[in-house]
Length: 213
Image (cartoon, rainbow, N blue to C red; front, side, top):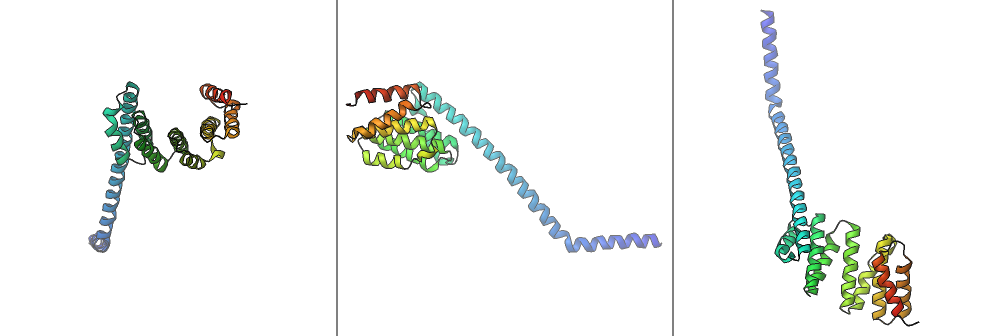
């Protein structure tokens, strides 16, 4: 009999505890389940987004190589709008800039390169976009604007290859502004740069040879 009373006391104790703590326990469990489910959904969503962006960028590259980039240009813009933080969005913007430039749509090309400057998380991609923008502005004889863009490129952080492009563009701008001494120094830096490509060195040497001695 005493055992029955003991068990009944235990049941009463459990009932009392549940009445006091059951609601908060269920709430905590529910919050955990919802949070975990939400995290799983968000993680899977991000993975799917990244895979889709990667696949779309590969399609864009292929179309660019085949000269049919116009067919996927809307998808590039959509990728930039929907996933601006994605590295593929910045890469797509670079392709858009190249496509716009090839069509003579310089304003659009400039906007796409500036978009990369504002959104790209990769420093190398940012600097590449800025140097392409500076070269394009110089080609359009907008030399002051080109020099402003170049001034924003942190030369101390450039790789040897990037430094070669930086110096070459600086030389082009200097020639356009009739600063032959500055142009000579810039092109000579390219020629002496062991990290610059052979093609770029060759172009710099041609520019050097054309400068009056």
